[in-house]
Length: 141
Image (cartoon, rainbow, N blue to C red; front, side):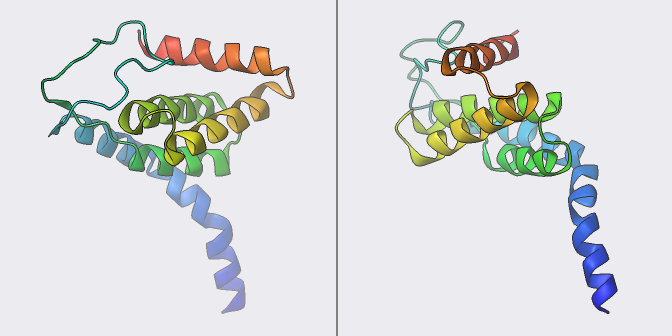
């Protein structure tokens, strides 16, 4: 019984990662739900290309499934391109949904920084910021 429990604990991240497409689908579907406009329309990460001062209802900004997916992928393949992409998207969406001063946005920024350090190694704060800005900007395309 103990061996089965240990095996289950070891396989759990792999099983969770195998349903990555489901998490992605949940995130995409949630984005299509009507909701209030994002609180931080002039987000520093995605300022270019965003409408300023939008007052009409906008698609919901989903972060929960994206955060779960980023944690799962980070547990299975830390520092991978998918891990960096997911944490960057989580950071951008959290900032847009809650604003820069919110705890979830700060947590997302830390998660994104950790993913980039795992991918590129210890770099200066300026270079780390540039790497995250570049990845966030590429997500706009």
